Amino acid sequence: MNKALEALLDLLDLEQIEEDIFRGVSRSAIVPRVFGGQVAAQALVAAGRTVPGDRLPHSLHAYFLRLGDPGAPIVYTVDRIRDGRSFTTRRVVAVQHGQPIFHLSASFQTYEEGLEHQAPMPPAPDPETLPTAAQMLPRYADHFLDSGVVDRMLEARAAVDLRYVDAPPYGSVGEPREPRSQVWFRTNGKLDGAIDAPLLHVCLATYVSDMTLLDSVLLAHGRGGWATGDVVGASLDHAMWFHRPFRADEWLLYDQESPSASGGRGLGQARIYTQDGRLAISVIQEGVVRVPR
Image (tube, rainbow, N blue to C red):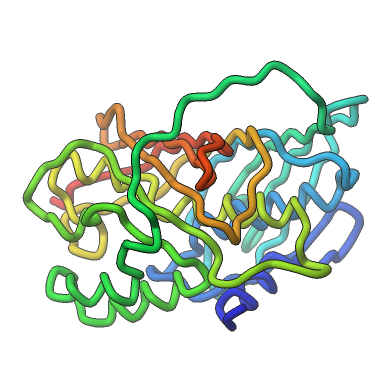
């Protein structure tokens, strides 16, 4: 396990300061605000700390309300909405400087047998044949607003091995493409021993899910993203459904597409598959996507 992954796991190990109240800190991000995937993952950790261990998240729905300050702690307050025989519901509010910055509702369920079907996994190349971020990003250094972007992106994503199947948005600026993107990802190291808990794998996937989901919106318009200066944006809301067990330290295919963009907003939807073809997660996110004036 590399040091970046250890730091990410420390980030998700929230401090409990009172019953149902937790405190988290932030790590350096690519832009001077708290990374949305971090606050979503930490909020899910907070919710999970108040739920029996045999119940795992099956869905979450969240809104990003304000930009987070990476220099200040985040306080997560959990509201125990319902504890049923099979399902548990929690609501979490993340607060900084006395104001809510994020709101999450999550539902947990005990395991049970049921009907089974799924959408088939789309074709994708073997992730081991694709370039790593360290191999890919320097190719596009001259596309970015400043040379430090490459180093910041590599640092921010060092805990995760994330590999694009095709060129990312900043690799094809000015060339509109089909609004679809695929990436493979896994943690940069195995999770074992005391830390190898099912909830942690779910929280890590939640963390990664905010990294690339709006790429497909940019691809449809030949935009490179914030790093090239041709759009500005931020996540607005985020929803995930967890269908089947998976491990975040094994390859997962993030198959993403955008069905719509309008009104200064873009919608991304995706499915996450295990390498052997099981549909593990469905994801939907809308974000602000504005062209600078």
